[in-house]
Image 1 (cartoon, rainbow, N blue to C red):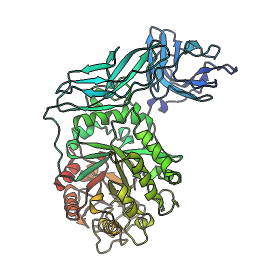
Image 2: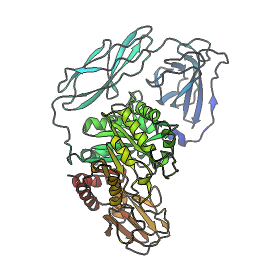
Image 3: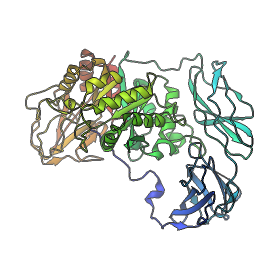
Amino acid sequence: MRFRHRAAAGFATLLLPLAGLVSLASPAQAATSATATYTKSSDWGTGFEGKWTVKNTGTTAISSWTIEWDFPSGTSVTSAWDADITSSGTHWTAKNKSYNGSIAPGASLSFGFNGSGSGSPTGCKLNGGSCDGTTVPGDAAPSAPGTPTASSVTDTSVKLSWQAATDDKGVKNYDVLRDGAKVATVTTTTYTDTGLTAGTDYSYTVQARDTADQTGPVSGAVKVHTTGGTTTPPTTGGDKVKLGYFTEWGIYGRNYNVKNLVTSGSAAKITHINYAFGNVTGGKCAIGDSYADYDKAFTADQSVSGVADTWDQPLRGNFNQLRQLKAKYPNIKVLWSFGGWTWSGGFADAAKNPAAFAQSCYDLVEDPRWADVFDGIDIDWEYPNACGLTCDTSGAAAFKNVMQALRAKFGTDNLVTAATTADGTDGGKIDAADYGGAAQYVDWYNVMTYDFFGAWDAQGPTAPHSPLTSYSGIPKAGFTTADAMAKFKAKGVPANKLLIGIGFYGRGWTGVTQDAPGGTATGPAAGTYEQGIEDYKVLKTSCPATGTVAGTAYAKCGSNWWSYDTPATIGTKMTWAKNQGLGGAFFWEFSGDTSNGELVSAIDSGLK
């Protein structure tokens, strides 16, 4: 099972006292085409958080919007989200992003910004008319250009061509975006990009601008790999999968960024990343944390590329950092994982209409803003037709039906995987769903062979949370890696579609007097983020392992008792996985490892 360790807030402004909503404009009551209103969401004296809301009060859709206003001298916008904001002196202009220009009749949308000073906006205009709706908004934004095609690819250049966009008043020019950042503005439908690096992957999109300076939606993406070069890291470990989970919330309290995969050396030793988690709600896949996913601006020292994000680039956040990581390590594939312990309750609705659910997931994963980042989807349903944080009663066939629909929608060019229970008991969670029948639709299962035992049983007995095999005194028969894998195989799941799971953390109790497993306890041991759990990077020095049981290390320090995997026990488990013909290994999650990635290194070397 996995828990979401979320920071209190993604925006610093949300930590400041709220000054109340102060409305500085009110929409007209007449049924006109569109209105714009402004509120001050938060005020901390020297600065504030502002929000504009655009509402379509007409009977036809609005395809784009531009808001203009004046601030008094000394008041300015310092950062923004969900709009491109520019200024000329004290005059400010906000334009829609490529993904939020369209507003249906009766609908509204908002964008926000942080500002300095204390002034209020005046002279508001919406699409050239008054913000109170007394003037009909202006012309439509241009359409999306055609997806570029690449030709004349060399070590250092590529020629791009695309079909023209259309606009009611004419297209003025096109922005060419490389890996989400603008590299050129041209008036024709071709562009040759130069100064590239040999043997490197790039992604290109195009965006049109009309004579009113409105930008339309971004085109589809074309991937380009330049010729030559010797910098592409070799794939290690044969055809074995070496997959790690990267948590979207790790960039907050844990301060663990995508760049840490590079500095630790881990990026060169893995094959896949699961980005966790997307939400599952209303029968659909949904964004988990928009700020972390695609809005947070990373500084130069936090960024994989070493270049700071800018306020006006089309994509920021973890998604852009993963894009930069893939440019450096083209062998890495990234999957977007949906669900997890907290959000698995949404799968009940998803199972009612698997085709609609699959369509929603495809639309989100293949969104043009980040389609090049992801190579597939992972489903982390805890647990189909069984109980996790909530209990599911979708039926034994629900999981198979969902995975079949996902494969049908995503096709064979994308990866479709699932994290699964490791409950190998008779009548347990593996028996509750048709994992055997669903196996034909998945590339592999991430079998969560950890969290078998822990301090949720506050009085013990103490036991390794990730036993490889059974042992004398194990609290519950069938709660082992070997039992889980044997049960999956018996249900017809091919061994090479099973990955062994490794936890990069330990679970522990306090009030323990017995060194060996099986002792009594008084409750969970203290942990940095949560009672009863601690990262390996902390435990390796704070409570070094003193013994092993069932292929897992354990240690007693004072009255605390911990179990966790070490490089040595991982080596044992990797050898076992190879002997069983398993497809590889995965782990939860990167930030629990040491700064030099010693657990990832153990997985990598163990699977060679």
